[in-house]
Image (cartoon, rainbow, N blue to C red; front, side, top):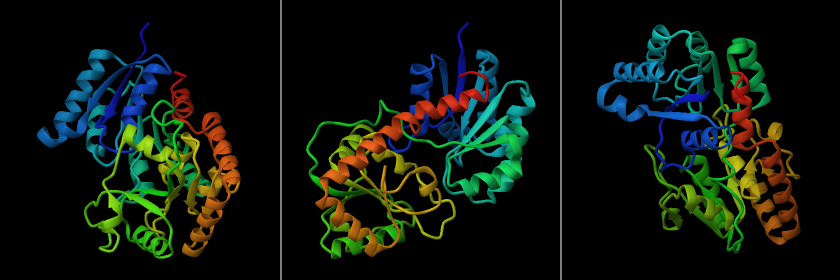
Length: 326
């Protein structure tokens, strides 16, 4: 009997962390599911949430999937989920919430989600956060990471011609760090687009190149001796980012700012390098550039961790186990 999953999300490939594209690929190729994809964002823009609910329910009735996996971010609100639940309460529905910025109290958000979803997942921030949500939400809520798939991000045999690489959005904290590093003679390449209120400092703009995605992003990562991962803003609770997994996937060296979740997931000094203040970041960059043997050891350990634990196939296997579909 053919196993089917209805995957609801946004399937654009013009962003670095477009989870749905890799989810669909893995569910098809690693687990043998027939994946029915429904892109809700354009539907909401054109016709509103009610049309979206109707179309999802129509697809559920047509295909009778074993599971509906909704990758919601901020775009698919609770009203849509309520309508789906009211029509077809017997079909198992999982919600994978992979947005980093909740505009409301996350506890309230997941309490509402627990009524309409059999399981709600959110990307991991730290063991501390995990315990808080587990205590408040019980079995309806589970933390899961969202690392890349090994067929999308992987090692390439190429010249390491970039000393330090940063790719990301220009938060104030990142502007300050990158300015400090450039002023202190670090040869750093910067890739990223301005977004909303997040703008590059004028003095940084001559050094910034447009963001790259997918294949181009993988190739860029492979050229870097050090991949710099500062958090968005130091005062944002839950600052762990999926970008921390990308150096592992390409057998690279991640230089990660020590925020919530980093030390719980990685072993700094073994599979990654962490830093806490600008001068400490600068010192570790200089040290790593002088120590190719250390970079090789860190990259090999990180790549082993990625293959053994933190790759998308492993994560989806865990997710499917909650539906007895692994």
